[in-house]
Image (cartoon, rainbow, N blue to C red; front, side, top):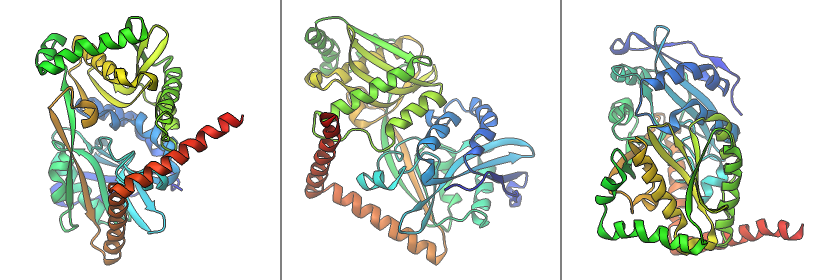
Length: 412
Protein backbone atom coordinates (compact mmCIF):
# COMPACT_ATOMS: atom_id res chain seq x y z
CA UNK A 1 0.00 0.00 0.00
CA UNK A 2 1.21 3.53 -0.67
CA UNK A 3 1.33 6.34 1.83
CA UNK A 4 -1.25 9.14 1.68
CA UNK A 5 -0.22 12.02 -0.54
CA UNK A 6 1.98 14.42 1.38
CA UNK A 7 4.89 16.79 1.04
CA UNK A 8 7.77 16.37 3.48
CA UNK A 9 9.69 19.21 5.02
CA UNK A 10 12.67 20.25 2.90
CA UNK A 11 16.07 18.86 3.73
CA UNK A 12 18.63 21.68 3.65
CA UNK A 13 21.79 20.41 2.05
CA UNK A 14 25.46 21.08 2.57
CA UNK A 15 27.13 24.30 1.37
CA UNK A 16 28.18 22.66 -1.91
CA UNK A 17 24.49 22.62 -2.82
CA UNK A 18 23.24 25.27 -0.42
CA UNK A 19 20.78 26.78 -2.91
CA UNK A 20 18.87 23.56 -3.42
CA UNK A 21 16.25 21.74 -1.38
CA UNK A 22 14.93 18.23 -1.86
CA UNK A 23 11.35 17.27 -1.04
CA UNK A 24 9.81 13.82 -1.06
CA UNK A 25 6.38 13.77 -2.65
CA UNK A 26 4.60 10.62 -1.46
CA UNK A 27 1.83 8.67 -3.17
CA UNK A 28 0.62 8.37 -6.77
CA UNK A 29 -1.12 11.75 -6.52
CA UNK A 30 2.37 13.26 -6.70
CA UNK A 31 2.62 12.15 -10.34
CA UNK A 32 -0.36 14.32 -11.29
CA UNK A 33 0.69 17.11 -8.97
CA UNK A 34 4.15 17.36 -10.52
CA UNK A 35 3.10 16.57 -14.11
CA UNK A 36 3.04 20.17 -15.46
CA UNK A 37 6.51 20.99 -14.08
CA UNK A 38 7.71 17.51 -15.06
CA UNK A 39 6.66 18.09 -18.66
CA UNK A 40 8.29 21.53 -18.65
CA UNK A 41 11.55 20.04 -17.40
CA UNK A 42 11.47 17.41 -20.16
CA UNK A 43 11.29 20.17 -22.78
CA UNK A 44 14.81 21.14 -21.72
CA UNK A 45 16.00 17.52 -21.96
CA UNK A 46 15.54 16.39 -25.57
CA UNK A 47 17.68 13.28 -24.97
CA UNK A 48 15.45 11.97 -22.17
CA UNK A 49 14.01 8.54 -22.89
CA UNK A 50 10.44 7.57 -23.73
CA UNK A 51 10.19 6.03 -20.26
CA UNK A 52 10.81 9.34 -18.48
CA UNK A 53 7.36 10.88 -18.99
CA UNK A 54 4.51 11.41 -16.49
CA UNK A 55 2.30 9.34 -18.82
CA UNK A 56 4.58 6.31 -18.53
CA UNK A 57 4.71 6.73 -14.73
CA UNK A 58 0.91 6.96 -14.45
CA UNK A 59 0.39 3.88 -16.64
CA UNK A 60 2.92 1.89 -14.62
CA UNK A 61 1.34 2.92 -11.35
CA UNK A 62 -2.18 2.10 -12.48
CA UNK A 63 -0.96 -1.38 -13.42
CA UNK A 64 1.54 -2.31 -10.71
CA UNK A 65 1.40 0.42 -8.09
CA UNK A 66 -0.22 -1.72 -5.40
CA UNK A 67 3.07 -3.59 -5.06
CA UNK A 68 5.14 -0.47 -4.36
CA UNK A 69 5.13 2.92 -2.63
CA UNK A 70 5.66 6.00 -4.80
CA UNK A 71 8.21 8.60 -3.64
CA UNK A 72 9.09 11.36 -6.10
CA UNK A 73 12.07 13.53 -5.15
CA UNK A 74 11.88 17.05 -6.53
CA UNK A 75 14.95 19.26 -6.33
CA UNK A 76 14.39 23.01 -6.33
CA UNK A 77 16.23 26.26 -6.51
CA UNK A 78 13.75 28.30 -4.53
CA UNK A 79 10.43 27.51 -6.22
CA UNK A 80 11.96 26.45 -9.52
CA UNK A 81 12.12 22.70 -10.26
CA UNK A 82 15.65 21.90 -11.48
CA UNK A 83 15.61 18.11 -11.12
CA UNK A 84 13.23 15.22 -10.57
CA UNK A 85 13.98 11.67 -9.46
CA UNK A 86 10.81 9.51 -9.70
CA UNK A 87 11.27 6.66 -7.22
CA UNK A 88 9.35 3.89 -5.54
CA UNK A 89 10.04 1.86 -2.43
CA UNK A 90 9.60 -1.86 -3.04
CA UNK A 91 9.13 -4.18 -0.06
CA UNK A 92 10.32 -7.66 -0.97
CA UNK A 93 7.84 -10.17 0.42
CA UNK A 94 9.26 -12.44 3.12
CA UNK A 95 12.64 -10.68 3.28
CA UNK A 96 11.65 -7.34 4.78
CA UNK A 97 13.98 -5.48 2.42
CA UNK A 98 13.16 -1.89 1.45
CA UNK A 99 14.55 -1.36 -2.04
CA UNK A 100 14.72 2.13 -3.49
CA UNK A 101 14.11 1.87 -7.23
CA UNK A 102 13.12 4.03 -10.17
CA UNK A 103 9.37 4.37 -10.65
CA UNK A 104 8.67 1.70 -13.26
CA UNK A 105 12.22 0.33 -13.16
CA UNK A 106 11.70 -2.79 -11.07
CA UNK A 107 10.22 -6.25 -11.13
CA UNK A 108 6.52 -5.28 -10.95
CA UNK A 109 5.48 -8.08 -8.58
CA UNK A 110 6.88 -11.26 -7.02
CA UNK A 111 5.36 -13.65 -9.61
CA UNK A 112 7.20 -11.81 -12.39
CA UNK A 113 10.39 -11.69 -10.31
CA UNK A 114 10.28 -15.46 -9.79
CA UNK A 115 9.91 -16.03 -13.53
CA UNK A 116 12.81 -13.69 -14.27
CA UNK A 117 14.53 -11.50 -11.63
CA UNK A 118 16.12 -9.48 -14.44
CA UNK A 119 12.97 -9.22 -16.58
CA UNK A 120 10.00 -6.89 -17.04
CA UNK A 121 10.62 -3.47 -15.51
CA UNK A 122 14.37 -3.93 -15.21
CA UNK A 123 15.11 -3.27 -18.87
CA UNK A 124 13.47 0.12 -19.39
CA UNK A 125 15.65 3.22 -19.44
CA UNK A 126 15.56 5.05 -16.11
CA UNK A 127 17.12 8.41 -15.40
CA UNK A 128 17.46 11.36 -13.12
CA UNK A 129 15.92 14.34 -14.91
CA UNK A 130 18.13 17.37 -14.23
CA UNK A 131 18.25 20.74 -15.95
CA UNK A 132 21.54 21.44 -17.76
CA UNK A 133 24.09 23.06 -15.45
CA UNK A 134 22.56 21.74 -12.22
CA UNK A 135 24.01 18.22 -12.32
CA UNK A 136 26.72 18.53 -9.66
CA UNK A 137 24.63 20.44 -7.14
CA UNK A 138 21.67 18.11 -7.67
CA UNK A 139 23.74 14.99 -6.95
CA UNK A 140 25.12 16.59 -3.78
CA UNK A 141 21.61 17.53 -2.69
CA UNK A 142 20.30 14.03 -3.32
CA UNK A 143 23.14 12.44 -1.36
CA UNK A 144 22.39 14.69 1.60
CA UNK A 145 18.71 13.76 1.44
CA UNK A 146 19.33 10.01 1.18
CA UNK A 147 21.76 10.19 4.10
CA UNK A 148 19.35 12.22 6.24
CA UNK A 149 17.19 9.24 7.25
CA UNK A 150 13.94 10.91 6.17
CA UNK A 151 13.42 8.18 3.60
CA UNK A 152 14.03 4.68 5.00
CA UNK A 153 15.77 2.25 2.67
CA UNK A 154 18.05 -0.79 2.80
CA UNK A 155 19.25 -0.98 -0.79
CA UNK A 156 19.32 1.18 -3.91
CA UNK A 157 18.84 -0.47 -7.30
CA UNK A 158 18.60 1.85 -10.30
CA UNK A 159 18.35 -0.24 -13.48
CA UNK A 160 19.22 0.74 -17.06
CA UNK A 161 20.62 4.19 -16.32
CA UNK A 162 22.22 5.67 -19.48
CA UNK A 163 26.02 5.66 -19.30
CA UNK A 164 26.26 9.29 -20.40
CA UNK A 165 23.78 10.53 -17.78
CA UNK A 166 24.64 12.63 -14.75
CA UNK A 167 23.40 9.88 -12.43
CA UNK A 168 25.63 7.19 -13.95
CA UNK A 169 28.64 9.52 -14.06
CA UNK A 170 28.20 10.69 -10.48
CA UNK A 171 26.85 7.56 -8.80
CA UNK A 172 30.10 6.50 -7.14
CA UNK A 173 30.25 9.84 -5.36
CA UNK A 174 26.51 9.86 -4.64
CA UNK A 175 26.80 6.41 -3.00
CA UNK A 176 30.22 6.94 -1.41
CA UNK A 177 30.46 4.74 1.69
CA UNK A 178 27.39 2.72 0.63
CA UNK A 179 29.27 0.02 -1.33
CA UNK A 180 28.36 1.30 -4.82
CA UNK A 181 28.26 -1.29 -7.61
CA UNK A 182 27.49 -1.04 -11.31
CA UNK A 183 26.72 -3.59 -14.01
CA UNK A 184 26.76 -2.55 -17.69
CA UNK A 185 24.08 -3.65 -20.12
CA UNK A 186 24.20 -3.25 -23.91
CA UNK A 187 21.41 -2.19 -26.24
CA UNK A 188 21.53 -1.20 -29.89
CA UNK A 189 20.74 2.04 -31.69
CA UNK A 190 19.90 2.53 -35.37
CA UNK A 191 20.98 5.82 -36.92
CA UNK A 192 18.11 6.95 -39.15
CA UNK A 193 19.38 10.47 -39.74
CA UNK A 194 20.03 9.64 -43.42
CA UNK A 195 18.13 8.30 -46.38
CA UNK A 196 17.04 4.67 -46.56
CA UNK A 197 19.45 4.01 -49.44
CA UNK A 198 22.35 5.51 -47.50
CA UNK A 199 21.46 3.40 -44.49
CA UNK A 200 21.02 0.28 -46.61
CA UNK A 201 24.44 0.84 -48.21
CA UNK A 202 25.99 0.60 -44.73
CA UNK A 203 24.73 -2.98 -44.28
CA UNK A 204 26.58 -6.12 -45.27
CA UNK A 205 25.94 -7.78 -48.63
CA UNK A 206 23.86 -10.48 -46.95
CA UNK A 207 21.80 -7.92 -45.06
CA UNK A 208 21.19 -5.89 -48.23
CA UNK A 209 19.97 -9.05 -49.96
CA UNK A 210 17.61 -9.73 -47.06
CA UNK A 211 16.01 -6.30 -47.44
CA UNK A 212 14.86 -7.40 -50.91
CA UNK A 213 14.29 -11.13 -50.53
CA UNK A 214 12.44 -11.32 -47.22
CA UNK A 215 9.69 -8.81 -48.13
CA UNK A 216 9.28 -10.56 -51.50
CA UNK A 217 9.00 -13.99 -49.84
CA UNK A 218 6.39 -12.71 -47.41
CA UNK A 219 4.46 -11.03 -50.23
CA UNK A 220 4.31 -14.28 -52.16
CA UNK A 221 3.22 -16.18 -49.04
CA UNK A 222 0.23 -13.91 -48.35
CA UNK A 223 -0.62 -13.33 -52.01
CA UNK A 224 -0.83 -9.53 -51.89
CA UNK A 225 1.23 -6.40 -51.39
CA UNK A 226 2.51 -5.49 -47.92
CA UNK A 227 1.46 -2.28 -46.19
CA UNK A 228 2.76 -0.46 -43.13
CA UNK A 229 -0.06 0.95 -41.02
CA UNK A 230 0.76 3.44 -38.24
CA UNK A 231 -1.79 3.91 -35.46
CA UNK A 232 -1.36 6.66 -32.87
CA UNK A 233 -3.92 8.49 -30.76
CA UNK A 234 -7.48 7.71 -31.80
CA UNK A 235 -7.74 4.08 -32.81
CA UNK A 236 -4.70 2.93 -30.84
CA UNK A 237 -6.89 1.15 -28.26
CA UNK A 238 -8.21 -1.26 -30.89
CA UNK A 239 -4.71 -1.79 -32.28
CA UNK A 240 -3.44 -2.63 -28.78
CA UNK A 241 -6.18 -5.23 -28.28
CA UNK A 242 -5.25 -6.72 -31.63
CA UNK A 243 -1.59 -6.77 -30.56
CA UNK A 244 -2.44 -8.58 -27.31
CA UNK A 245 -4.38 -11.26 -29.21
CA UNK A 246 -1.57 -11.72 -31.74
CA UNK A 247 1.06 -11.91 -29.00
CA UNK A 248 -0.88 -14.57 -27.09
CA UNK A 249 -1.47 -16.57 -30.27
CA UNK A 250 2.22 -16.47 -31.13
CA UNK A 251 3.31 -17.95 -27.80
CA UNK A 252 0.41 -20.37 -27.44
CA UNK A 253 1.46 -21.87 -30.76
CA UNK A 254 4.82 -22.65 -29.14
CA UNK A 255 3.19 -24.17 -26.04
CA UNK A 256 4.21 -21.27 -23.82
CA UNK A 257 2.32 -18.61 -21.87
CA UNK A 258 2.29 -15.21 -23.49
CA UNK A 259 2.07 -11.94 -21.62
CA UNK A 260 3.26 -11.62 -18.04
CA UNK A 261 0.72 -10.86 -15.28
CA UNK A 262 -0.71 -7.38 -15.79
CA UNK A 263 1.17 -6.75 -19.03
CA UNK A 264 -1.95 -6.40 -21.20
CA UNK A 265 -3.37 -3.88 -18.72
CA UNK A 266 -0.10 -1.96 -18.93
CA UNK A 267 -0.56 -1.56 -22.69
CA UNK A 268 -4.18 -0.46 -22.21
CA UNK A 269 -3.16 2.10 -19.59
CA UNK A 270 -0.42 3.43 -21.86
CA UNK A 271 -3.00 4.09 -24.59
CA UNK A 272 -4.88 6.37 -22.19
CA UNK A 273 -1.91 7.99 -20.46
CA UNK A 274 1.01 8.32 -22.91
CA UNK A 275 0.44 10.31 -26.14
CA UNK A 276 3.64 9.07 -27.79
CA UNK A 277 2.45 5.44 -27.81
CA UNK A 278 2.30 4.10 -31.36
CA UNK A 279 1.35 0.76 -32.91
CA UNK A 280 2.97 -0.26 -36.19
CA UNK A 281 1.02 -2.92 -38.11
CA UNK A 282 2.28 -4.93 -41.06
CA UNK A 283 -0.70 -5.76 -43.26
CA UNK A 284 -1.17 -8.20 -46.10
CA UNK A 285 -4.55 -7.14 -47.42
CA UNK A 286 -6.75 -7.09 -44.31
CA UNK A 287 -4.61 -9.64 -42.48
CA UNK A 288 -2.31 -8.46 -39.69
CA UNK A 289 1.03 -10.19 -40.21
CA UNK A 290 3.01 -8.50 -37.42
CA UNK A 291 2.59 -5.72 -34.90
CA UNK A 292 4.96 -3.61 -32.83
CA UNK A 293 4.20 -1.30 -29.90
CA UNK A 294 6.57 1.57 -29.20
CA UNK A 295 6.94 5.27 -28.49
CA UNK A 296 7.38 7.94 -31.16
CA UNK A 297 7.99 11.57 -30.20
CA UNK A 298 8.40 12.68 -33.83
CA UNK A 299 12.18 12.63 -33.55
CA UNK A 300 13.05 9.21 -32.13
CA UNK A 301 11.28 5.89 -32.10
CA UNK A 302 11.68 3.45 -29.18
CA UNK A 303 10.36 -0.11 -29.69
CA UNK A 304 8.62 -1.69 -26.70
CA UNK A 305 7.31 -5.13 -27.75
CA UNK A 306 6.39 -7.02 -30.89
CA UNK A 307 4.18 -9.89 -32.06
CA UNK A 308 3.57 -11.76 -35.30
CA UNK A 309 1.29 -14.31 -36.90
CA UNK A 310 2.73 -17.72 -35.90
CA UNK A 311 1.45 -19.27 -39.14
CA UNK A 312 3.99 -17.13 -41.01
CA UNK A 313 6.93 -17.44 -38.61
CA UNK A 314 9.19 -19.01 -41.27
CA UNK A 315 8.67 -15.92 -43.47
CA UNK A 316 9.98 -13.52 -40.78
CA UNK A 317 7.06 -11.05 -40.62
CA UNK A 318 8.49 -9.29 -37.56
CA UNK A 319 11.82 -8.87 -39.36
CA UNK A 320 10.06 -7.37 -42.38
CA UNK A 321 8.04 -5.04 -40.13
CA UNK A 322 11.23 -3.79 -38.45
CA UNK A 323 12.74 -3.13 -41.88
CA UNK A 324 9.71 -1.08 -42.93
CA UNK A 325 9.82 0.90 -39.68
CA UNK A 326 13.50 1.71 -40.21
CA UNK A 327 12.79 2.78 -43.79
CA UNK A 328 9.96 5.03 -42.61
CA UNK A 329 12.12 6.62 -39.89
CA UNK A 330 14.91 7.27 -42.42
CA UNK A 331 12.54 9.04 -44.76
CA UNK A 332 10.57 11.23 -42.34
CA UNK A 333 13.32 13.04 -40.40
CA UNK A 334 13.61 10.73 -37.39
CA UNK A 335 17.15 10.81 -36.03
CA UNK A 336 17.25 7.32 -34.55
CA UNK A 337 15.56 4.18 -33.32
CA UNK A 338 16.59 3.66 -29.71
CA UNK A 339 16.94 0.84 -27.23
CA UNK A 340 16.61 -2.16 -29.50
CA UNK A 341 17.37 -5.40 -27.73
CA UNK A 342 20.37 -7.25 -29.08
CA UNK A 343 18.06 -10.05 -30.26
CA UNK A 344 15.86 -7.60 -32.18
CA UNK A 345 18.54 -5.23 -33.42
CA UNK A 346 21.70 -7.17 -34.17
CA UNK A 347 20.69 -7.62 -37.82
CA UNK A 348 20.21 -3.87 -38.21
CA UNK A 349 22.95 -2.18 -36.23
CA UNK A 350 26.27 -2.65 -34.48
CA UNK A 351 26.02 0.72 -32.73
CA UNK A 352 25.79 -0.14 -29.06
CA UNK A 353 24.52 2.07 -26.29
CA UNK A 354 25.34 1.20 -22.71
CA UNK A 355 23.18 1.46 -19.63
CA UNK A 356 24.13 0.55 -16.07
CA UNK A 357 22.42 -1.06 -13.15
CA UNK A 358 23.54 1.05 -10.19
CA UNK A 359 23.34 -0.51 -6.74
CA UNK A 360 24.24 0.53 -3.22
CA UNK A 361 23.59 -0.70 0.31
CA UNK A 362 22.67 1.34 3.37
CA UNK A 363 25.59 1.30 5.83
CA UNK A 364 23.47 -0.01 8.73
CA UNK A 365 24.22 -3.61 9.79
CA UNK A 366 20.59 -4.74 9.50
CA UNK A 367 20.29 -3.19 6.04
CA UNK A 368 23.48 -4.88 4.87
CA UNK A 369 22.15 -8.24 6.06
CA UNK A 370 18.74 -7.84 4.39
CA UNK A 371 20.24 -6.53 1.16
CA UNK A 372 22.70 -9.42 1.07
CA UNK A 373 19.88 -11.93 1.43
CA UNK A 374 18.01 -10.26 -1.45
CA UNK A 375 21.05 -10.36 -3.73
CA UNK A 376 21.65 -13.99 -2.88
CA UNK A 377 18.01 -14.92 -3.58
CA UNK A 378 18.02 -13.08 -6.90
CA UNK A 379 21.29 -14.68 -8.01
CA UNK A 380 20.04 -18.12 -7.02
CA UNK A 381 16.78 -17.77 -8.96
CA UNK A 382 18.51 -16.29 -11.99
CA UNK A 383 21.25 -18.91 -11.86
CA UNK A 384 18.75 -21.77 -11.65
CA UNK A 385 16.92 -20.41 -14.69
CA UNK A 386 20.07 -20.31 -16.82
CA UNK A 387 21.07 -23.96 -16.23
CA UNK A 388 19.95 -26.80 -18.50
CA UNK A 389 17.74 -28.15 -15.72
CA UNK A 390 16.33 -24.68 -15.12
CA UNK A 391 15.50 -24.24 -18.81
CA UNK A 392 13.68 -27.58 -18.84
CA UNK A 393 11.76 -26.78 -15.67
CA UNK A 394 10.68 -23.39 -17.03
CA UNK A 395 9.64 -24.95 -20.35
CA UNK A 396 7.57 -27.58 -18.52
CA UNK A 397 5.85 -25.01 -16.33
CA UNK A 398 5.24 -22.82 -19.39
CA UNK A 399 3.50 -25.72 -21.19
CA UNK A 400 1.29 -26.36 -18.18
CA UNK A 401 0.39 -22.66 -17.93
CA UNK A 402 -0.33 -22.45 -21.66
CA UNK A 403 -2.56 -25.52 -21.50
CA UNK A 404 -4.43 -24.07 -18.51
CA UNK A 405 -5.08 -20.87 -20.47
CA UNK A 406 -6.45 -22.76 -23.46
CA UNK A 407 -8.71 -25.11 -21.47
CA UNK A 408 -11.40 -22.58 -20.42
CA UNK A 409 -11.78 -21.45 -24.03
CA UNK A 410 -12.35 -25.04 -25.19
CA UNK A 411 -14.69 -25.81 -22.29
CA UNK A 412 -16.73 -22.69 -23.04
